[in-house]
Image (cartoon, rainbow, N blue to C red; front, side, top):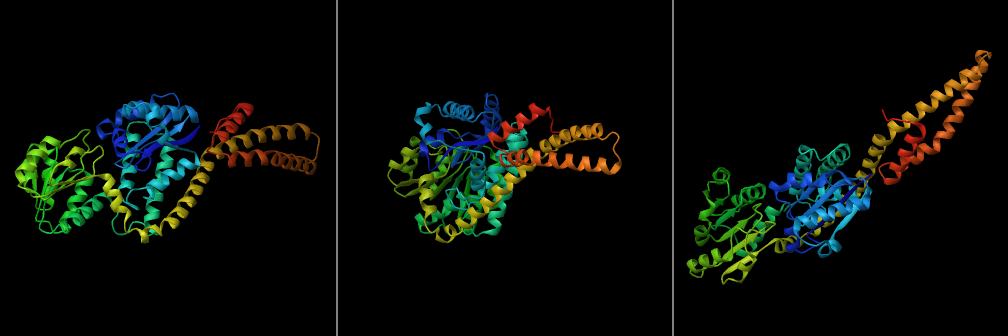
Length: 419
């Protein structure tokens, strides 16, 4: 068995495809149980964010597992496999480990060094664990990935300045409007990203923050933190007539602000421009709204382009971050070797030593203690030399399909258990 990751992200597919492959939080438990019901997956974690949907799995058979994940994504996005399969990336064993460590470190993010992804990785693992979808392999892998993410941010400067999508969204809006000072802003969505947007707005000197959310209590609590005002979703069109900026980041599975809503808003605004920054995936605002006079609609593609500018200093840290990741991949593989191979090697040596001791007893009858000791020493040396090469080969291949085959062969040939 091996660890695999199969996925797609903002670089491999268009935003339209990516949003179809997003797993909304309310559907995550069902998705995990769906994956666990597949023939070649024994553990699974789904990491679905605005930038990526990735399935990490402990695979019974590599090709069978990749096929299971591809079929899952096909059903999830209601797309035939040939419409997206060429855009999937897949890694196994050390490659899968390195990919997860790179993601957790923020090196693979749209905003280099962003901090939100580390919380998202932990959240994906926590949920999979709560649903019984993880076991010793993925638990060990994700625990180590979180350590890597923290180490890279501590020992490099990769997370200086803008370090989250929410900060980038507010900065992008400020650039487009010239300044946010004195502006009225509506934030649609009071989740983690919405909370960080509101915090950034409070530091930008806006005149008023309005917060709308499906759950009134959450909207009210967030608005109260910055002296803002909470709204129900039904009042969003009316609020859009008054504000200068809409920031939206809900986890809704369909559009919340459609073209018809905004047509009425534009007519009521009397020619005043409206800026919308929609960082939700799937999108909260009908993309067709960009055609309305006076409406500037920016989405994740625009945000990524904005984040690409001015990254020279942090990009210099990427090489150092990757060196740290390479070190951690080696450390992880060593830990896997110890975890997976040591008990089997111990069992093998114990079994062989039992045979050695029995044969020494049988052949030493009538020998004096000195002679017996010499026979025992010869037997121990022979056993050590015979076991050296198999032990080295087993440790070198630990965590790979070849290692699994060698381990199973030893168990079958010698009747071993790892306890």
